[in-house]
Length: 181
Image: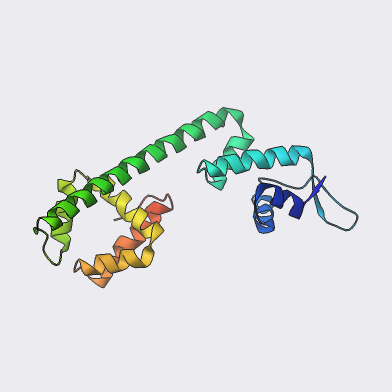
């Protein structure tokens, strides 16, 4: 049997992560010691190994729970995650192409000193981004650097009110909620 700190250390996790997994119903201790310490069995260790693998693959806690609770759901959840990663890769590739084009235009002296919203949207469309790709781009920007996202939107001459609306639906999209625009 393993105490919580021993099990956490074995997987390079902190104790609070195991407490969180217990709270979320992913991994509960098999028992308690006489002193009240949580005790985990070899089966718990194997379950935690699976949880860690699924989390490293990018599955959310909810998706991990679905995989652990139903073997029939495992393939479905994994296929959905694979599709989501594919979409993220395509969005990142579109961003990469856009940035490369922007650098090429800038090196040729063709980029104005300031870019407004209309110019930016036109550049994104010229790079092949549709509305969905732009929404994904905003969601990623908001998720990774919310303050920089706000500063960028304001630099395009977008009003504070419209910037807030864009940031709210970007955050909702980043959290997997269908954005309301």
